[in-house]
Image (cartoon, rainbow, N blue to C red):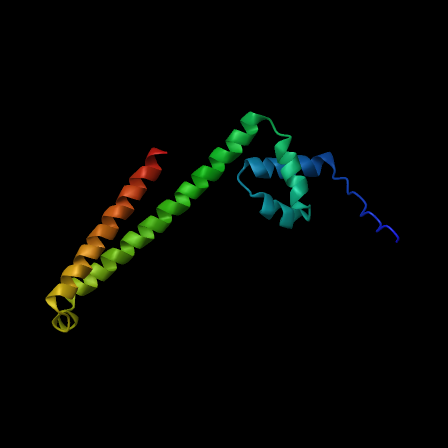
Length: 128
């Protein structure tokens, strides 16, 4: 049985490697860089592994900041949705007349509890 030919190993220029590492340090993900530069993701992970611990920590801090910002935006969006629903249910008399008291009470309680939980998460992300 014939052996399959090995795929030739690509050699990337030092400039390309430096550019990819700079973008990695600036917050780009390995997957994004792999697609952009058409470099196997494993190669980018190898380059990442070769970085100093200080550089790795800087990259992780940047990723954490970006995730924290995304979580905050999501929480703010959810809070705005709760406020909009609360405004609608409070101001729409026709809608309120069609609801029973128990259903309205559960809706208000659920909205308040959701808002409290979202605010707690938001403050927890600020502390990290």
